[in-house]
Length: 179
Length: 266
Image (cartoon, rainbow over the protein chains, first blue to last red):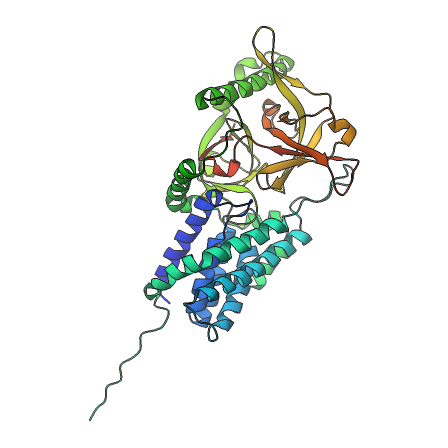
């Protein structure tokens, strides 16, 4: 994989995520564009590069959120492992593949975020004031999953058109016939 | 992967955030134009509904600024009288703040803002962040490459506040009148709103929609007392404790769409 192109994609995706998220919100949920980039890398790149690329995108996203570092890295690492395992059995260009992978990837990420919020709520319970712990809304997170899945065919479809720039498959050596 | 599990689930947030590099400003070249484009499209395609019925935006903005400056000045006056002679040392609130550009909003499931301002500009953890409409939040992390503000609407944000209304006095001046309700704990609930869950239904009967919720936090600078957090938009009952009220509070502006904020650096 051509890593310089990967970093350009990561930079653009994260920039668009933090810049556009407030304007793309629906019912409090903004689409997860970085997850779509993770799926694109994981579905096309060789196994090791795909896992490293997915994990690194998570690490970068962790830098720009209030959540503890490692949460997206872990989520995208898991998503990367799942998507890589499906490389041989899915049709990479098909919109249905994009939707289903975005749905499953989004659900995996949501599960990690909600599990973390359940173990470590953003604000703990206050017994003396009769105030329960504040938690991340599962409804908003599931809306985010659906929203991301709806956008997946468009974003992944566009990325699939420029995948040559990433040089996912190493150039084949030409065998000369002698004699 | 093991390290990410350690930092995300096992280490306390304070420790893991310490090791986190602050690179928010790095993404500004993409995030700022993208945000400007998003704001332009949103303004032209689906502008935010104007809650205030007055026709002129200019009058509204001026009115908001006046309310805030009156609240600030009246509190400042009390504070300065108590300090007897300290008045000359303090200027208006704006002079205590540093304007900082917003890079973008939270990339995850929380409500925060990435700022381009760094420790080189005097931005430090714990500093209050304001905008012309009131309080934005508090600096949670700051480094050489940027800073992160936890918004008042984030589920992890809690602050003491009280209810009141801005009234016009007979001499045509505006004053802030506190309502006869106990101080409350305002919590962020996500989706651009806050909630008050510590008042009983009986106590909440004194409230109506549109009442202001203002800052009354001992741990924050005294000069910020009575800075607006938002307005009451809905009063209902708590599902888990029906004798208690659930009061929804919303800032006048969508805080995630701010393009610039004021960090109280002094």
